[in-house]
Length: 546
Image 1 (cartoon, rainbow, N blue to C red):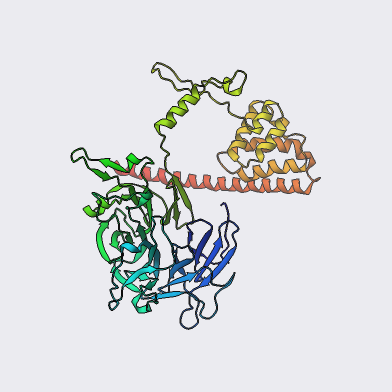
Image 2: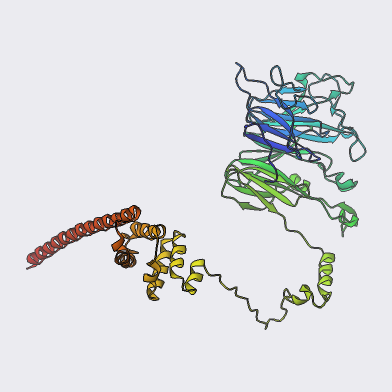
């Protein structure tokens, strides 16, 4: 890993970077949210959810999301409460006082664990609507100090939460048009029923205004709307979070629960002509929509990629494009800002990163060809290697592959130098019995086995005796090791009694051989009994036939 951030021994349940990448918010199983510096890895702020009734431990935080201003975070967890914290508040490297919450806003309404929290941003000038619960009071949908957006107007935002109680709730975090704070009971704008426990939420930003382009004609009715995708079970649902209406229900090809959603939003090309296409029949200019895909990951280990353009949503289907299969269940998905890499997190703790194939333009291809045509300077390495990577254009040409010379093992090198004793010592260190037997067989063919076993001290003799004691009863190695044991007894039989270690090894070898001989005798007796029984049975059958 590039760097590690400590969570104080608590298991991290979720993490999300701020838009500038400088801060990261981490939700833990201990019910705390830590704000950490991505560079120095220091914990700047720590927020805690309220303790459970009876003074028990805090419930785990399952989802964290940054608001658009980058100064506040929204979090939800197993206690079913969605909280908004201000990053400038909280305690430095500590947990809040009192009930342990200290949140700016707390939204209560879910009847089960909150598994997903996200933020929906939109331009408030286009969506001034009446509150569904207010008495004639108009709202600004989260009007706050976000400031001017990238398109010249201020932005508003809503917090959306999904829970195991099958519901998705939209929360207003701002003030009404008079600047007064909205009552807590009026902050829930809508409640949407997914039909299954909600595992993940995903926001589809408005297509209009992307990259500074705003279509005027032939635009889809959803181009100006932020859309919300919810995943529960094996079904995706797309909602209009501003009105709470369901725009479509889309079954997927997953066999188990969908646990992660991710947006792959590929922009059009950089030229002006790529933003619009001309209709040959009508002659009108129409919007060239971006390539928008939804990635889904589930407990079945499948990653599925679906087309999610506004035309697909209107037609009532999310076409399945392609996917991949993993051996472990998937817990999370994430895409880099340039949409070139995708990270897949699994329940086993493994993170897999896939990179999208880079497309080479015609201009880049011509530059590469021109670069290869430049003749290298004489005497340089490039001049020596010229033509090494040139591709053959003639079908009659034959390509000769250069065979790399196989590198010999150290014991093979010692055998080539006739250092038989050193070769046997080296191969014994590999702890591979089939390799040791192969070297012993080679030494026997060269008549060098006696030379390799001679002139050994206590340490080198211990290695070969230990190997013989361990494998002499193996029928695959017995014929070779019996001959080695005989040679050792002939050479070192007269030295018995001078070393306690060598005497102990020879005693173990004798006991091992004696036990093996007893086993062989018992097997021969059993074989004789079996032969007697088989012969008697055969005689009885012969007598009966007569």
